Image (cartoon, rainbow, N blue to C red; front, side, top):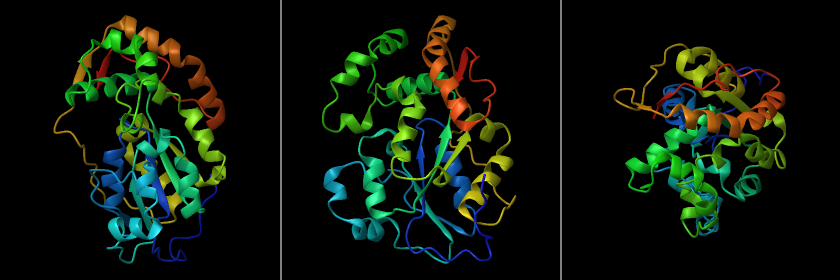
Length: 267
């Protein structure tokens, strides 16, 4: 990966220059809190709810200055300024809207095993009162339910369990506007098991000094796991097999563990 200019020579930022754009249910909140501890990184607040400025046309029409006033008014002497909005990865029209305001923006994508991501997304929808179907029925009926999305549901996408895991289709939308060097792809499982090397990639990408003086904050009080029928795991592994292979070819690397997902999924 091409490394940015030295942290010492990087200018101070007065507006956002990077976005953690996805994927949903892939450790982006923990990643946000790690970056937020770095003295040369400013993260937009609050972290919840996420901005979604580039998702809703009525918000976007308020203009760039509105976004800066609401989300970035407290920028200090940081060199990297960013936010986390996972809906930016998969919502139609977002890359073009961002480009119209910030043509030099950088993007960080955390990519999780799409099998585990789909199941975790299902349990998130259950927890938030959006899902009432059993897991097998929800997976089988996804296509029909997604086709019925209207209004805000096109953004929330509570039933897009499998669809959101076809990462490359969304990445290609960003590549219509931004060069590959503006996109950084990190693997969630590697961040969870050994955070520092993954964070170092992000620091280099953002042009800030590497540091080990960060606390890895888990956003749940304790790990929660759900036993999943192995038949569902096998089905989903088949669904994503080809797209995972295409993603590996695109990234130019193997992603260990994705093609053999466990039956016990962290949610």
